[in-house]
Length: 279
Image 1: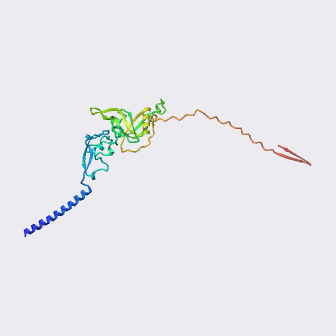
Image 2: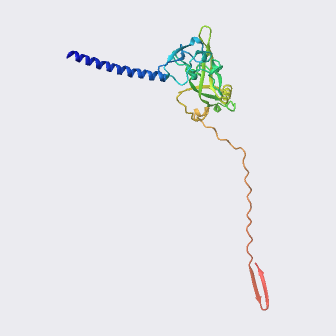
Image 3: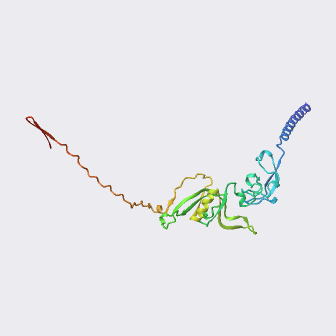
């Protein structure tokens, strides 16, 4: 009796194991047919890469990823990436994507960061103008100009106005390349990414007056219209109204001539005579 029960249990276990094995086999066959288990070889960063770095083979490595976890555009060989410049910082083991590197033959360093149709303009700064060192590559600033449009010596005519808004900083206080010791080379300039028209405004503002950078939140994309402020307005003064020196001559008065009085006629009849007298 016990022997028959053991045989029954063993037979049932074999049947269940065969069913599970068959189901697992079918799942694996479907996965292999769809390519879900065939890992793809992709290029990742071998170490932290700063903006402006010219990629070499030592900066990259190949790893295998499942296709389902990959973005649409990836690099599958190092030859596709070597020689390009880094335009966005990358960390170690991060996927190298086309949006993070410059185009082929675009070079590295600062030129690779300039988008088509844009210009990079450098302006001289000091610690105050650069917002005490908080203006760094990738931040956004407004450019404020202080000067006099009339070039007069009147302090009340000194005006401060915002000439550019929401400008991206490409380089701040140091070059992208490093010296032989690997240290950043400090230079008293800040490089801004602007359009050709704004490049002219920025150059003119640098030569016509004093510029100041205003650091802004990168999430703040609004560009409100800010009126210019004159020096006199800070002291509650208003510009004096213009005085007109020329006076118009009064028109001469015309003499009013009274109309002539109406004449009175008196008719006198004496017998057969008739006389008319006017008064």
